[in-house]
Amino acid sequence: MPIRTATLNKQIQHNGQRLHLAMASRVRSQGADHPPSDEEQALQEERRLLKEAKAQRQALALAPKPKAAKVVKEAKPPKQPKAPKAAKEPKEANAAKAAKAGKDHKPSRAEKLAKKAENLEAAKKASKKSAKT
Image 1 (cartoon, helix red, strand yellow):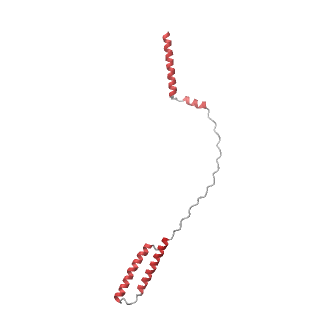
Image 2: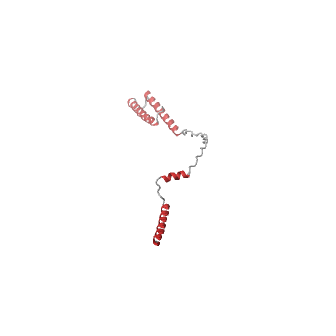
Image 3: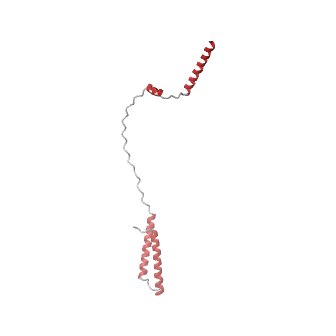
């Protein structure tokens, strides 16, 4: 698994601290004239490799990323037409009316008005007949 860039930064920082300590101890003990020790050279080489890896990762981050291919949906085959249903026989109107007549029927407004008009006429005729007699 590749090392993260943040981890590389931390490794470079720790390497720099160790390298600085090694250089300071060499200068303090032997003087600035002496060549670097093997430990110093190893730390410098490691630091160089870490910096190269970091630069390589940054270049990779700037490179264009591969994009996922678009999903192509396959066309579904057309559905088979359904068989036509058999025609139903029409119900008889009289049977429906007869069934309704058997139940309690609530009269409509028009029926109420018609009945009221009939009752008024019957009352007028009845009063006329009674007046003559």
